Amino acid sequence: MGSMAYEIPVTQARAELAELINRVVYGGERVVVTRHGKPLVALVSAADLARLEGEQQEAAEEPVVRSVSAIGSTPSAPGERRRFGIAAEHRGETFGS
Image 1 (tube, helix red, strand yellow):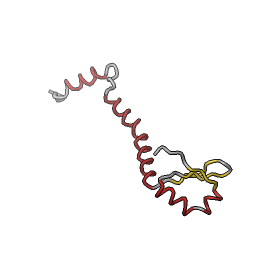
Image 2 (cartoon, helix red, strand yellow):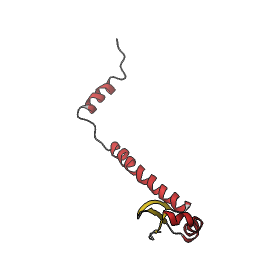
Image 3 (cartoon, helix red, strand yellow):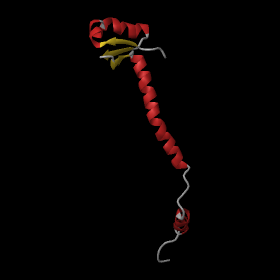
């Protein structure tokens, strides 16, 4: 729904709230309530809000998924493989044998 939002001053919105709700719910419009020409709030349908919040959640999770994926492909620090390799070779031995 890429249509432009209908703008209305807050004083007029107070008087026409029921009509604005109908325009949003049944007409699929988005209404921006303004004060002195500046946007204050937007009226959107509950379905539109759920879609917008879902997109926001996906956008917030994307960098985390990318970071975790990158961790799996990060090479070991120099010397780590040798150090842990030596520890693994001695794992089967017991002290004092």
